[in-house]
Image (cartoon, rainbow, N blue to C red):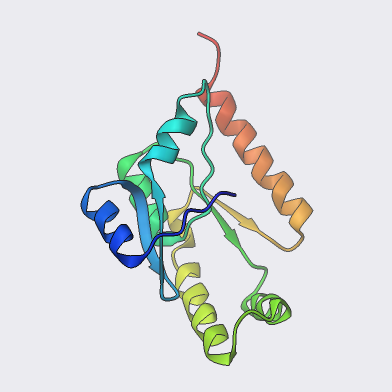
Length: 144
C-alpha cells in the first residue's frame, strides 16, 4: 500500500481542485484517493482497481462509476471487532469507543454494497474476495 501524507492545506487545495476520486473524514482524519493514482492504474488493459475505503467514499465511487463493484468487508460481530481493536493496542478507550460507533453506523450501510464478505478468517475472506473479483474480471475482460 502506498500512502501520501498531506497537511491540511495541501489536502484542502487538492480537494478544491477536484483531485480526489473519493474522500472522507474517518475518526478525525481525512483520507482520499487521488484521481492520478486511479488514472495510472486504469491505463493497463483489464485493470481492476481495488480501493480500501470507508462507506462514504464507496458512495462517491458509485456516483462516479455506476458499474463499480462494491464489496463490504465486515467483522463477524461487533464483539469480535472490539476484541481485534483491543489486541492492536493502538487506541485508548475513547478511540476504541469512536471506532466501534463508526463501525456500527457503517454496518447499517452494508446493503448498499454488491457483496458482503464476513472477515471471520483472513484467508477465507481473501479467497472469497478473489472469487468475487475473478467473476467481475470475466465479465469486463472477455476477448472481443
